Amino acid sequence: MWRYLAGAAGGLLLAGGGVMLWQGQGKGPQLAAAPLQAAEPAPLAEPPAATEKTREEKRFARYDKDKDGKVSREEFLASRRKAYAKLDSNGDGRLSFEEWSAKTTDRFAKADADKSATLTAEEFATTRIVRKTTRPAPCVPESEG
Image 1 (spheres, rainbow, N blue to C red):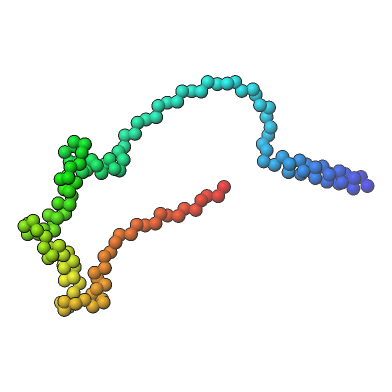
Image 2 (image 1 turned 60 degrees about the horizontal axis):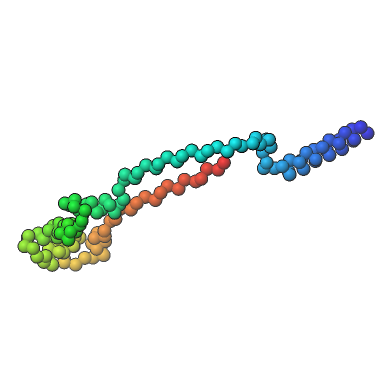
């Protein structure tokens, strides 16, 4: 009989302990809070000055060749003049259709393997522009824990 009574008492103690744990779940040990003294806040340090130029500041600096803080019309068009000069193969200051289309004409001549002045589907496929693709960022699974 004592066995049944001891078993029932042990079961009630376990059940009561389980209820107490269930109600106190998520709460850490409770410590007596010491009274806090008001501490004076420490003065904030001055943030460092930004030294890196923004993208627009860098672009402006590239165009401003004479470094006078202004971009003149001539400075603004300088890059276009260089590109134009590359296309103007005879240097006469005029861009003919042949000069303008030289790259395309050369690409057509290179693709026309049988020199028939027409491109078959296979020849045309060689004129495809191959663009560099960027690799996608590697997907790293979030760690569990």
